[in-house]
Length: 431
Image 1 (cartoon, rainbow, N blue to C red):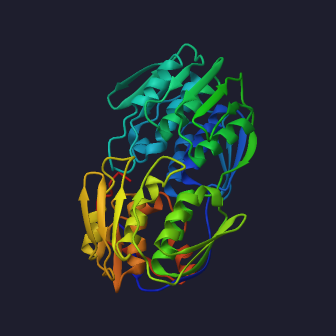
Image 2: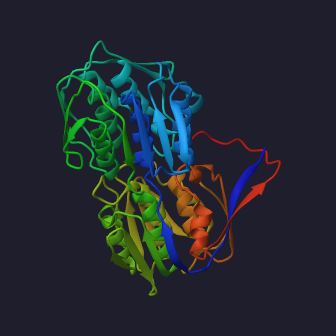
Image 3: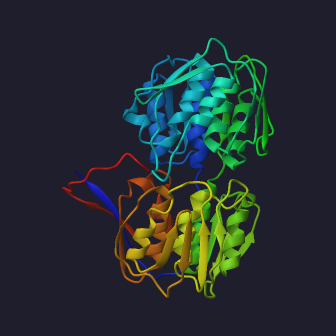
């Protein structure tokens, strides 16, 4: 079997421009949502990553007409789609497969979808999804690791989210757009990709209001039509290149972004010693003075994103002084810390808090990507380290970053994708 690693020769500052791809977290909700239209939908600016490839494969198996216009544009004809269960062969490889429950419940009034996979950094309960579907009138059971939902009809309801959940907010939106009457989601998540999904649904004729606030109102419509829609830029990919520029030093223009989505990241980078200049659709990150530590606490949007926490840890590992990194979203997101310790970082983890004492420099060694964003952190750590870093298990990184070697290479980084032949390896489903 063939295995690929990233090989990084660290110690280079980054200079130049990088274009950000479409948002992964928006694409994996918007692409299955196309099935709600029973028409032809054209989606532009999709990221060329493995999670998107998987969701397209699932739609193809369901009978949708899939036409790739180019690597970032797809046409989906959902008229031929027939109801079928979604087995764990594909669904178990990534978390966003659970959006098919809301989509199929909305279109067919029933769904059977394997329990989702994805990165393993804490419990991923679907109880809030289940509660939302039941409030809309569905009966939901979990049988043999399959989520089985069925309803005679879906009727709008007022649904209060006990905790802020991006996934549950999206799934309830998907199920509610074709339900009868008004659905109100209170304590809804406010992430940019929720707003993007709402805009996409409205482009197909849905009536969704309030996305981006903590109260979303959805008035059900009888049917949706086709549309052409362009996905927003990826907030987390943009943040990753911003943190890399600050960690390595240099001068990088991060293009095709929405600067407002990046404000919490920009604020922390300015605190550690970088200079951030915002343009209409770009941010420039420069850093020529020493890094200083800061405290970071992850929060739901508009707070500092949990998906940027590992990347920030890599930067803080080489920032002067002591930093405290607090995780408030996931229970077990510090699994990657052992890899940074191998590189010489000084980090102590106690539950959801990591205390990071900055060291002069990290040392290049072989490390593993324990999940998608941890993999990005390993790249950043390798770029700053002295000597050669080998990043293994890069299939996790390919789930969420398009052309990562090419993009970092264009900034002057020495990073290569290297194929190792005849490797005896079992690739995990998680990520």
